[in-house]
Image 1 (cartoon, rainbow, N blue to C red):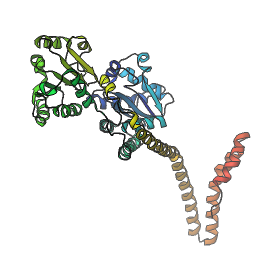
Image 2 (image 1 turned 90 degrees about the horizontal axis):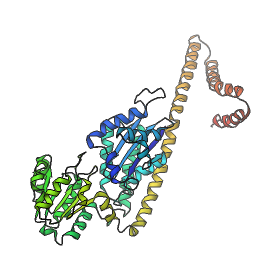
Image 3 (image 1 turned 30 degrees about the horizontal axis):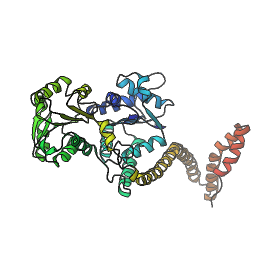
Image 4 (image 1 turned 60 degrees about the horizontal axis):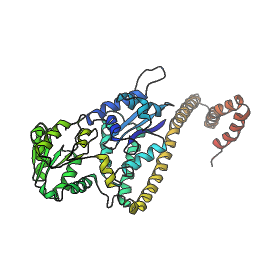
Length: 428
């Protein structure tokens, strides 16, 4: 059994590649099923899912595949799966992937959930995203004994780290970074009209930060009016449909977008027309989506200031030195919990052997017990029966080890000669 993790993140791959490897929320269940089938293929190419486990975590900063498999080349197979699923050349993808077996995979999961591997050190959103990924994997039948146990311990470790360290203290969020960048373009946000595209958790955080600056207006554009209106109402704003953007995009000074769309929502032509209608007044745009909501070519336009999730990541890398003590404390907690989990895995490896021993022992016991009952039924003395029962059980237990000793030779016999007395040492 191998526990494995393969993926890429903001430190190993550019945004242009991350958006190609990202899984849309409605793809996760289907992808988990496909991954299990992929890992469970035997040497003859037959597919199945017996014994394999899989879970997929896909966010704006990372795409990771966690799996349990018994195949020797599983970790390379996981990389091939990601390439084939997304129809990408394997050679182009492999260079950007990290491949983590066993304790390294566990350690990585613990660090991710605790916010140590995030673009924003200590950010809490990733824990919720990981819990959702586990929920989807479970619904798709991807969780077995090992991944279920690993993720439960992952969540417990994240809670311990956040409760016992200052890892999340004074962190600058993506939302706060967006406000900070916009203030470089506009002296006062209170004079600007702000548009949010999408109505998910990240947009909600951004809306909270921008609303605190009392913008002149706040608008939410979303595919479904009901959800857009619910968010807009919280900030005394208004809601519009995405289909209305071509007619009104020029009205907004600040635009923040984060949807789950697989294709760009705002194209170069749409922004060109908006800039012309605004008579070249600047537009500040933030694209937090992966895949991107705004075509990259928009950044080349004069009077448009476009920032991606990676651009904001550079802004939030502040104050890291002051939190190094908290990082060290968190790493120590994680290392202890990794060792504990690996000890649990080692114990699990011998479970089938222990079960076989119990089953075989029970068969031998029942055989000798039945023989003793027949002796008693024939009226034989109880002492004679007990003597025969004990000798019969002992003989059956010793038959296997004695046979192994007679068949062995050389180093194997020496090893058995040392081991067997330890296994059969009398306990008083």
